[in-house]
Amino acid sequence: MSLATLALTSAHHLYGARLYGTPWRAHVAHVAAWVAGAIVVCVIAGRLWSGQRAGRVAHYALLALTVAVCVAWLGLYEGGYNHTLKNLVVWMGLSDDMFRVLFPPAIYEPPGDLLFEVSGMLQFPVGLLTGHVAREWSRMGRES
Image (tube, rainbow, N blue to C red; front, side, top):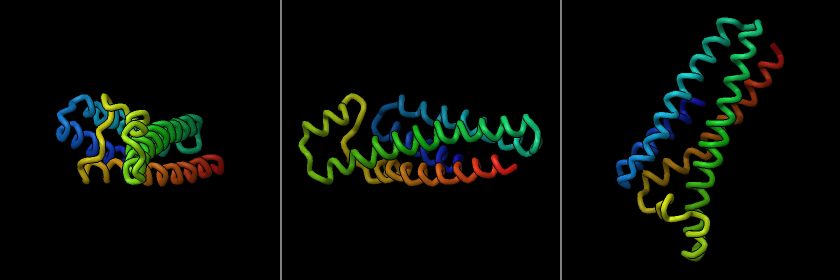
């Protein structure tokens, strides 16, 4: 699920960078690629050294990366705040002033592209599901 979260986020940010002419958005895809690489290394190390200290360190590094990046940053902040809440504010008809307070124009775009908004909002449930999977990994790590 971590890699799915990273892939979705990368596609979303690359699309947004092109759509809105904001190349700075593409940096998230670069960060996601490095995090994905680190996650793969942790998974491989955890399996190679299962039951040993190095395997446990890899397991907890995997959990830390997953929770910090995929759940908190990409799921809750990016998908939850940046997109789901932003769209709710618009759909609920709150004032333009309220929108600008919550979502300053220099950083945020008002909803205008369905694919961009849907892919952004999808990061929220995918991030939450990733958190659920991470909780299961945590239980498995304590039992081994």
